Image 1 (tube, rainbow, N blue to C red):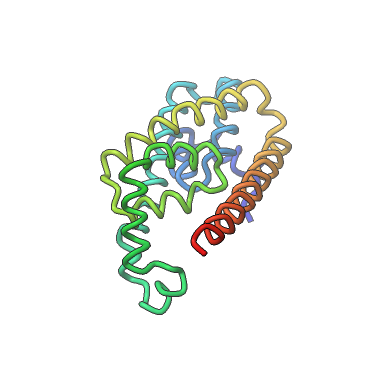
Image 2: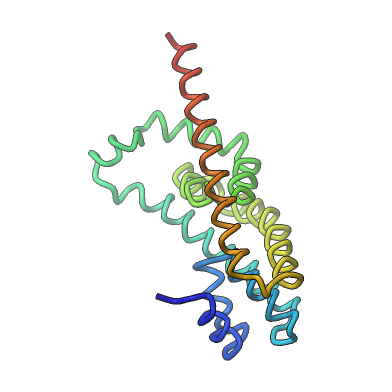
Length: 191
């Protein structure tokens, strides 16, 4: 298993060259670590920000492609089980056509629902240009905030990682609870 300490050693040794693929795989804590290393003078701050933003966008694009291309790869019975029938996919297309940008920004900023929303945007066939634009709009402040957090408090990266997990978990629980309430109310109205 790769530890945060070993990630720091690897980035110290290989710099922005290794930061790029790591930021595709695991954005927030890698961005915090990049900020910490920039505060120590081991990475260029502007270069680190550019690399983590690009890495985040590449990771998002991969999830988008999984939604856009992957739905066709699923057997029909799995699509049925997941509720991905033609009517639902059309509704998803309508949602992302009307409110895709807002949905992507919320997904990126809550972090916990991000992957599912990015895949859903692909399944809804949201235009790639709009998808990348809205993700850039959300990624810039998020990445800058995590980089600044690492720059200021990066020595506490283990605790920061724990708090990122906790906050993401709480946000996911709140989103799920809100989804259950919405679903129940919608069922009541349709009866």
